[in-house]
Image (cartoon, rainbow, N blue to C red):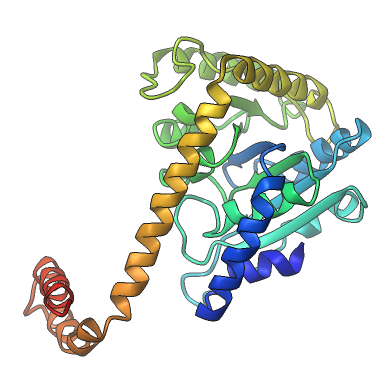
Amino acid sequence: MAKAITLLESTRPEHRAQADELLTALLPHTGNAFRVGISGVPGVGKSTFIETLGLHLIGQGHRVAVLAVDPSSSVSGGSILGDKTRMERLSVHDRAFIRPSPSSGTLGGVAEKTREAMLVCEAAGFDIVIVETVGVGQSETAVAHMTDLFVLMQLPNAGDDLQAIKKGVMELADLVVINKADLDPDAATRAQAQITSAMRLFTQHGRESAAAPQPVLQLSALRGTGVHTFWQAATAWREARTRSGQLQARRQHQALSWMWERIEAGLRQEFRHHPAVQALLPAITQEVEAGRLAASTAARRLLQARQNDQ
């Protein structure tokens, strides 16, 4: 599995054809897992929650795969890839698979090949696939568009964080979890009431469950309290949307979005390596850096050069 995901993440052109063949062969064996996305502010306890939840699910007979996305440095380009070290018990379990991957500058809180890695996990027989994002922000909503259930984690005293992220992420959340509720039960209860009230005010355009507010739960991942209740709510959510056909429609929409995303990425790569573009790029880059040419004008010139050379 690790080698397959490494092949999928490779940027070498000769590996891309091999990776496409692998995905085509795996596709008939995918689609049977419950895909869960976990996001939240840094320090909210995502890794601890995932380990506690994973061990709980393994105890129920499930096989759990975790795809943890680590932020890549904008300076060095490197990633620590340390999420796995926070899951000491889960990482050594033979019914669990944990794969940290660098975001490599990809926006949305996930890695570029997270979707492909999910298919590898499903084909290997893991019936629960959990995607942990790098942390929450206005742009880090991509995980909601590749999973069946999007879970947003909050802290009891995170009023400022709530205001900062609610329009970017809160509207997309299927479940909201207030972690570390044991540290301040009163604050956790207030947060639960505030978030529940705020969700009733959101206009949830394009959501299949717009008429019903999302559940808001309290738990303590460190103590393991509330995890069973969370999974009951997640299972009920999945069963209701499976019966109504909404889950299948959601996956179909996600597959088409994935296709167009890869088309756009492929076009960007092809454009950058086009001979006409490469011939003009150094001079135009200098003009833009010197302030003698507007960036929008430079972009149009490069696009026109690419078009004229066809």
